[in-house]
Image (cartoon, rainbow, N blue to C red; front, top):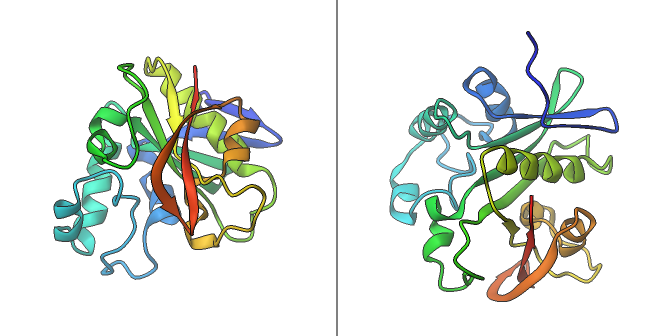
Length: 200
């Protein structure tokens, strides 16, 4: 039986990043060179020391283990059977953001964080990031999140360098029904980052 999508919109579907979809996670966040010690969307998921220690294939193994857990490490967007997007979503308490000195806690609610949105080259400009964000919120809601937050740049319409665009923009989050909750002391690509929040 086919899994029920978290979101279906504009011909795209969003599904949790389960172990059965690990190859699609690899497509979205794994480096081209499997021995490379970069990405796998780990830099904001695990402590900096562990992020530095995990090398090459160890990074893949770490993320594969995450896909086997009850709470999955994120969601994937599909155009038919082809994976076209990734969004990382998890309880903030489980992330380095819980101890961040630059991104404050708004209140004592057990917030979930959406901190990385990635669309495959060749598929950008089709609204996939909007569908991904909606899917991430839907997954957090399904897992009992009382509130979902993101930490996008407040770029006021200015162009954001693609390598740093993964954090999203304030407008993207506003379009998804998030509202400004707090400024931060963090920046990305030279722009200030803000906390955007939404009740799922």
